[in-house]
Amino acid sequence: MHEGLMLIDGELCAAADGGWLQSENPANEQPLGRVASAGETDVRRAVAAARAAQPAWAAKSVWERAAALRQLAAGIRARGAQILDLEARDTGNTIGKLSADIQIAAGYLEYFAGLGSELKGETVPATAQGLHFTLREPWGVVARIVPFNHPFMFAAAHLAAPLMAGNAVVVKTPETSPLTGSILGELCREHLPAGLVNIVHGLGLPAGDALVRHPDVRRIGFTGAVPTGLAIQRAAAESGVKHVTLELGGKNPFIVFPDADLDKVVEMAVAGMNFSWAGQSCGSTSRLLLHDSVHDEVVERVATRLRQLRLGDPTDPASEMGPVNSRRQHERVLGFIDSAREQGARLVTGGRRPPGDAFRAGYWVEPTLYADVDPAMLDSGNEHAEL
Image (cartoon, rainbow, N blue to C red; front, side, top):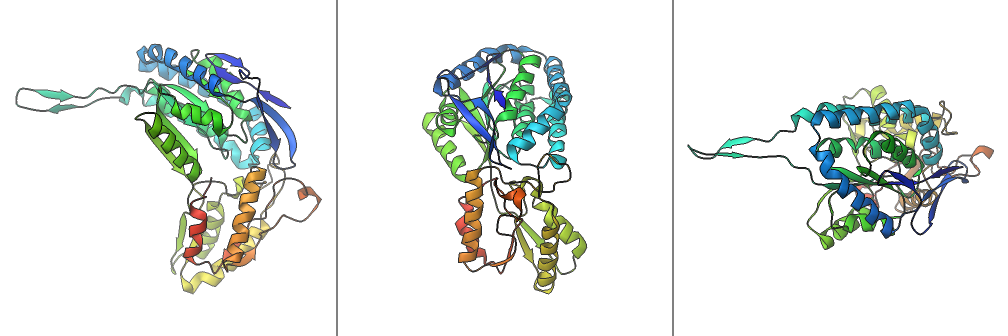
């Protein structure tokens, strides 16, 4: 059982009200650990710590900031195996593909460390005698709200740009799969000044809402579901003039023309759906738009490949697909499958819990393919599109 604390002002701490958020293994529904669950008091402390630490950090040279980011990257690589094992069990993502997340996280920190000297303004001739010039200034306190599909990678990698630009950051981990966020807290405590990065766990209400509405948080980044993105926009607008960046779910089209290499089409169509994390990705190519002349052949060949995918324990490197992330996500996916059938789409393969004792518990769904889908059917899913 993993017990994770928050990082606030350089200290690993429990929630002020003693609250905890439980996490379970989606492969078997067994308790996996818990994290301290932040309330409004904890969020206010985290933002206050970030605001206090930010001026001294911004006053450092880009070389000093870059050195700290590289140290954090090295720390992530050193604990990569531990992070991967815990994240595979906490998310359901298969460890074979998940291993790239460690390299991406560390690589982002190293990349933006190298970009530090490019933080330049511009000088513009305004008149024959005068110049206008711009000077880049940090926002101050930046909030980052992290999704469940790549919780460690998105939390760690997206520290890089705001920190290199001289900001302090408050990260809120996802409600499901928060456990590796506590390891990131330990690493930030070891390698960065106290208060510069603060990591809180907890529910969207109250923790996420309190973070978005805090008057000292002027810059917010969020990846996740459309309804949550709308709620963040509303809360931010009600509490100040803030800059909000949203990366939300979608229905990305994969378009196949009649002259395409069908072997490559099948390979890329299955790869593009990101079954390594059960299709839970804003980048998944969840719509295949096929020319009539190749439609039937591509559908059958994709279905054959989906039936060959190996479902199994996410910590087994041989597994190609694990469970979906949580009970709530499982119910939503099954709801979409039912909706497609009710609207007249033809189920080609999947659409159910896999057979066998290994899949009796957990949030398992076979890789699923529908055909004869009318574009109007997609409207019912767009507003609920999630990672």
